[in-house]
Length: 115
Image 1 (tube, rainbow, N blue to C red):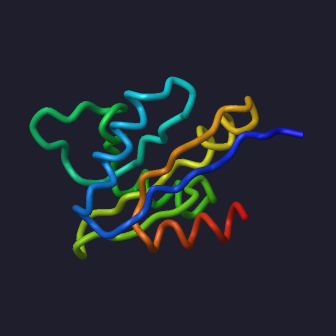
Image 2: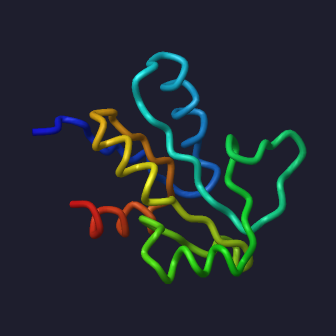
């Protein structure tokens, strides 16, 4: 039986989830840190595939409609953010623990989809 765990660091926007996750990545090599998708434009210093996967609205819609996202939400009424399902499931299947850095709504969705 696979002992890999799915850990969720959750809280409201700007509460410090990223700071906690960055520290965990410094301390431990093993956990897989999921990179979210977003429909917003990159901010200065952000790198596609590291900070986020920056994708188009139609691409995001396709992923959501086909169950390719573990969770997703519209943030501040305009941009969508979501967690791609495949990399998370792949990491778990290879025995790697996974850390998701998501808001409370997303955490509830993941709990329903991956109890």
